[in-house]
Length: 182
Image 1 (spheres, rainbow, N blue to C red):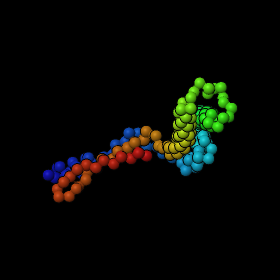
Image 2 (cartoon, one colour; image 1 turned 90 degrees about the vertical axis):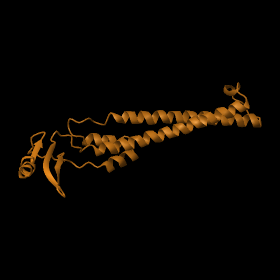
Image 3 (tube, helix red, strand yellow; image 1 turned 135 degrees about the vertical axis):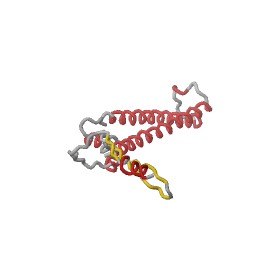
Image 4 (spheres, helix red, strand yellow; image 1 turned 120 degrees about the vertical axis):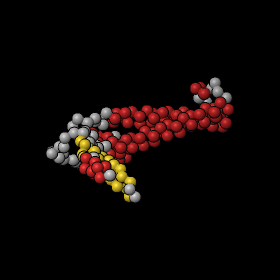
């Protein structure tokens, strides 16, 4: 029994390192996810640019997302304007048909019921365009926040593990593994 305790307490009490310990401490600049989120909230894409400036050398940059953000906002805004314009044109056409106003030749092939259905269809598409604008806007805010959280994320290969015996009580022994990421 003494031999078992000797093995558990003295031989298994060891350190295992995946890499050698670095003596040089990197200076880490504080990067705020809150600032990135606020910048991206007020100016779409500004949070991505803020994250791009703070990224350490050798890491992937975020500036390439800004044109995608503005393209998404531009396309959804374009469809919103188009659908709103067509919905208003159809509303005016229906109003003119009921009150004897001038009719538009573009809608002459449709009857009153078809005009109402088309107006509802373009109103639904307009609403989806508004939802698309909101989703692109919210997605770029969330992206700026998440990326800012990972700016100072440690991706070094210095991982270590410490194994030591432990006593759980009532004659129960075991091993404890401690993992150190940094």
